[in-house]
Length: 212
Image (cartoon, rainbow, N blue to C red; front, side, top):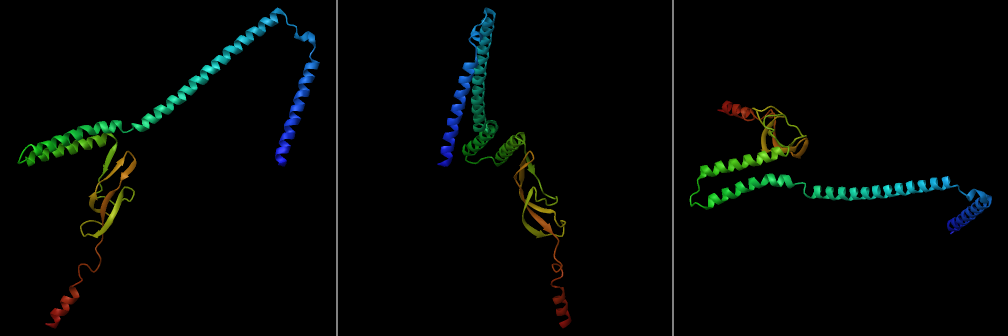
């Protein structure tokens, strides 16, 4: 309440000061100053015309700016909404190939397995090309060092043939889009055999022979 009364008082004081200044200006302005020569009147008219011209230009620029903002928002929304249009268009030939392959198997009582295999490989090649054009790359981890950045270890398995920390088996390929990981490769990581793996039955066998 105190703040409200203070604000009201400040507004009243401001109005009073403004009125006093206006009165002082009016009273201090001599009447002779209001008389303009034809040249001064013409100059004022020219300035007024220029002011009108500038004001119209500002209005046009403001309207153009608002239209640009609306158009940008509309274009952005459409770009987000139809972002996958090109990708879908590239997938349609793959879908057509699948449809033809299914139709070929249904049109014959005994489908040609060899021809079907060729068709499936062709479809796989088409799909891989589509992903490659979109910037998708396979992550082949077989035989390399285990890298948790691009791979996911599903298990560890002892191996005498593959060095410790190497990828022993790839269960599922990984993929990345340019430099961003889409799916890590699922792998089995090799580890060194434990010390008692090879000679676990040795002492028992020796004792049995001695007993005989």
